[in-house]
Image (cartoon, rainbow, N blue to C red; front, side):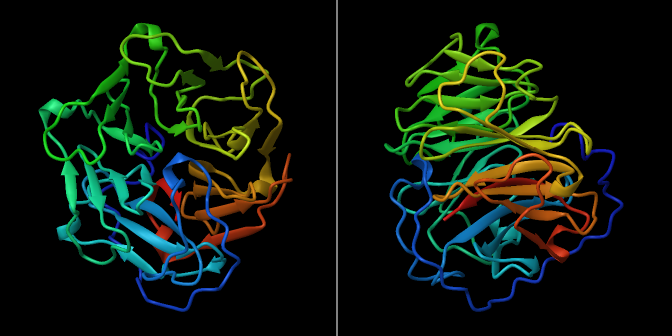
Amino acid sequence: MRYFFSAAVTAGFATVLAACTTGPSTAVPFSPPLGQAFSGATRPQSGPCPKAHCVYLALQYNFTDPGEIAIYPLTARGSHAPNAAIVGKKTQLHFPQGVAFDSNGNLYVANAKSIGIFAPGAQGNVAPSGVLQGTRTGLSRPSGIALDAAGDLYVVNNSTPSVTVYAPGSTGNVAPIRTIGGSNTQLSYPWGVALDAAGNVYVTNFSSITEYGAGASGNVAPIAVISGQASGLASGVEGIALDASANIYAASNQSDVTAGLLEFSAGSNGDVPPLRHILGYNTRMIVPMGLAVDRDDNAYVLNWGADTEYSGMLVFGSEANGDAAPERIVTGKSFTYRNVGGIAIR
């Protein structure tokens, strides 16, 4: 998180480790998630959710503690322990933020100074199958990550505003194949990233969403910018996702008064109003960060609720709008005294 947790979550908090028990999964009809990161998704045959899709959540205590990737069945609700987790010293996790899958099911995790890659079905105290890290990478507090259909990895760097792109399978201290960065890009405290089917790149900034054309590189101007009073994008725009129609979803978390989930029509540009703005007391959103959208356009929001009963994952239906209550809330010890980061569906 950029600013919002540093005062609220301190190193003095006690470490609370989530119970990573293995439990039965609830079967649901197979419905592959959409988006380039999931373009090759198939029904999982093994792992923590063998009969249903899983949702992977990045959780951490503070900047000095390692954190974990908690794994829940997509149908989880209520006070629910994760079915499994990627956690422990071998994982090399360090303040995990963005999470994303490639078409083969490899999990990519943005850590404070690196990108860790985990084999399909990884869980427990396991070493990553690869790590992208070093001075040549251009990584600078990476946050959001996404992969395109070809397997190129897109990383948003928060400290040095940029998007760095890496060739498929890149590990070690390797340079990006492209970098979007510079004053013309209008990147400002960038956090999340998403890709459409044409390879256009969407980035959430402090109070805007910028879009870059496929293959964009260097100090290039965005091809579209969503910002302004009518857009409803308040300070602190974090998570971003696209649905099957390339509609744009974004989570804004300035405060518990203006925190909300917005949906914009595909191709939006300028100070345009959202199609939907889920906002208000009943939404239970306090500091929403991670965001994912499933095939049925249900939105999954990873919410930091100041360690209230609403800390956790909130699920909103495709028709939700205004001061709408979530259809499901997933809470539990995993979210106590913890920052929240990215979310990905597999």
